[in-house]
Length: 157
Image (cartoon, rainbow, N blue to C red; front, side):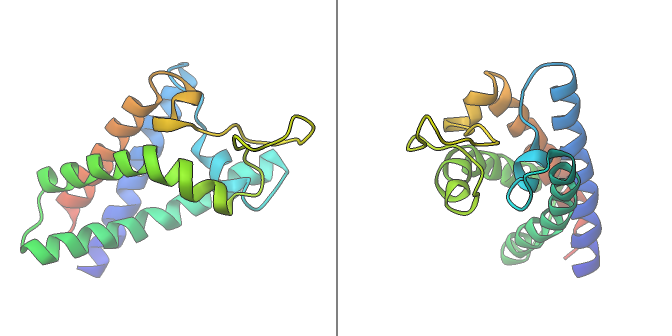
């Protein structure tokens, strides 16, 4: 199960990243996951983006382990159960993670309390990440459902 969770997490992260990146390239969202993650440790945007992709591909398999734990607790895994978990993951990400937890640990993200004279590298995502465009939450939802479906398909319990 550990090996399939790692591979499922890596493949799912690749799919999720491709969906979000493609949506950004065609102008459906302004969200840049790599930059959002990478600027937690670097002000240099080029380095931050590279580090952000590395972080994302480390976090993906870690989330896949969480999904695998759910699969183990219910006694089966499937792409449909994974997709459902992905949808829940997207809702959690769009509400709690980016609005409550991320500003606590991200030193370069603006918050509602940021003063006008303070310079932030990253605009706050806002509720359901709507500050990055009206389509952003839908794209995030589709990407996380795809991630979950891939992990559910790959993980064998």
